[in-house]
Length: 379
Image (cartoon, rainbow, N blue to C red; front, top):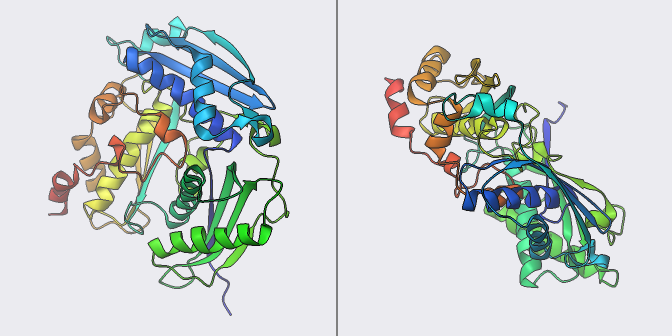
């Protein structure tokens, strides 16, 4: 009997303490970009019981009340009392902000147009789902997103903001199937455990699985410790940039190590990850390959990437040399070129800070407007 081929990805909800911090950082970024599209922002956030600390380097002409932005984010998530995890209106907020280093500005100003830092970035796409995303992370995101929507609507009784999901896919046979779904969902202390778990299985898990047309005979774990009342920043500390695999491809692709949230688009940690996803998705959609991973690397203050690498896992329909030629000819990979191509100086980043940065049609790096151009390389 052969061993099963199992692969697992996880996601977390907007109420997870790390995601709370990501959302505050990106809400501050958006507030700066709304007034000053050329804002330089590197904003980090830390949260724990009754405390939010906001720090970093911001150079902007915008006038932003950082404390108020943080309180608004907490309130929107649903953290409105200490017993839920943190109180938006009464928690302590400390702001420790400085301006961006003038040394970095020397290499990233409009005249030079170089990258804001060195580093490596990856983008990935696969045709195993309609959104060109890996199946495990797609389902994991949808589970916590749908559960959170039901919580906000009031349909999901006893649920609180902090949630996690984990999905294991069985790839042993040609057609993938779900092996296991795990959800841990914060809840009120006086709840009907049996009804709570029934709702999660039948009205959340099964509903999402139906959207993918997959099997229902999967193993189920719901709040395996038996109780999850204390959550949010009261249950665990949160930090900006600590969910980088949740933010990207759930472990199905490499990661360069750089987080996204709180960084303006001159930071290639963010913008180059977006353009590499854009390239990979269009290449797969155009039929040049079934799976594609792009690696880009940059040097601080230098315009052009120091390297471009393509991996197609043996699924390429043309040679990788042709694919590399297409990338270099059809895509501007300078930092300014990326910003212009994807129109990245807009205040669009708050929406990215929960439920993944990829596979969601509302973002410009998810456009498929290069497909026809790339198809010519199939000839």
